[in-house]
Amino acid sequence: MKRRDFIKRSILLSAGLSAAYCGTKGGEKIKIVILGFDGANWPTIDPLIKEGKLPFLKKFRAESAWANFETIKPTKSNVVWSCIASGKTMLKHGILDFAYLKRNGIKIPYTKSDRREPMIWQILDDYNKRSAVFNWWCSHPPDKIKGVMASDHMRRIAASRPEKHPNFANAVFPEAYFEKFKELALTNNDYLQAVQKTGLPDFDGLFKKLYPGSDIRKAPVIKSYKSFVRHDAYIEAISRYFLENKEFDFFATYFRFPDVIQHFITLFLDKEYKENLKKHLIGRTLTPEMNDEAILKIAHLMEPVYRYMEKILKEFIEIERKKNKNTYFFIMSDHGFSLFHGGYNHYGLPKSMKAPDGFLLINGPKIRPGQIKKAGVYDIAPTILNLFDLPVGKNMDGRVISEIFQFQRKKRYKTYKLGKMNENKRDKNYDEETLKDLKSLGYID
Ligand SMILES: [Zn+2]
View 1 (cartoon, rainbow, N blue to C red):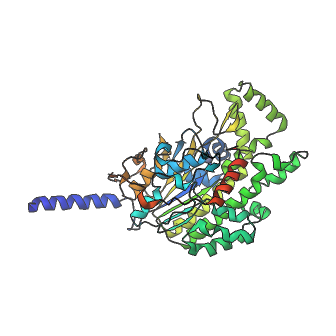
View 2 (cartoon, rainbow, N blue to C red; view 1 turned 180 degrees about the vertical axis):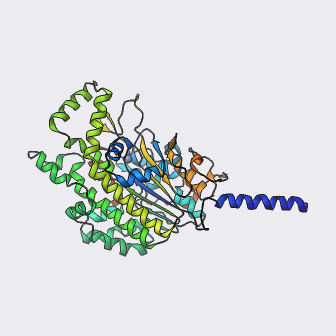
């Protein structure tokens, strides 16, 4: 190589490097935090923002890039969250449904051993990035990454008796964290305390008051509300502990309460109004105005629920911002909800209806605020890899949402394979509990 060419190339190289770092201040390393809230959606959040009920969220959105987050059909949470973490379609990542039948007729849930593509934390692990992942769908047993992982089995410790706690040791990796996570289960295992701490309504008590003749044990979804609340209060506690005390490059945690609660929220509409709405839904005579009115009423019932979401957002963002100025926050859900003849739901919709959008907020240094025209569940993994200045997966189905960057990032591509990263061990106990869980939500028979 001629000397002049060498210098030219060196200049280009260093220009590339500085371009890669101009999204950061003072040379601090980039960190990424994902906060997932299943089922949260703008149509039920917007009215509350307008009424001044969610002041932090209002301010945070004004400072963020945000979108109506496009999702896929079938709009099943485990399928969609796997799309988000892999950047790939379900046919590629392998999580196709909630459960399947084995040849002998036994139902088993789709889980980690069915994954065929690496999840983002596995890709980052190859680049020696330290990830902390809590409660992600289909993540049990946890991946043996360099960081820490508590699988979606771990939360159940909060609704289990202390003598059962040792059974959850295999839901954390590395196991050294188990002692601390077990300790946090003891302070998050009381329903009424959890209700008080989170600010979530005592829907269990409210149901019993409103429907004195009904047996709550036979009422879909709400029958398990007491467990759901403890689960999410617990996930908040272990996530917060980690955020406050430990180091990471990539952090992701997932909460289920906005979805679970919306699955039964219409029970709390005024009785007469509800009967009338039901009539119009079944008769398919609901007008757009009636739809908007019903969504507004649902939004008002959801106010304490979104206040809890806002509290987590505010506190987690503050904790992290104090530690690092260069953290990028990705806040999202996997879908919203729609009113149709089947009720208020996110799946089972008629073919003519689009899967209901979720919500998305991206916030961090030099992120251009404002609405993103088009963003969907496949775009998160590519955007995160590009932010870390790492190659995007060649066969990922999304794109880097680069129009929100007020800096240059070169795009590179690489094929990532699952290879030896996945473990195929199944945990019978986890499978059974997951089936019970899916049944209580009405997701499987
Ligand atoms: Zn969901």
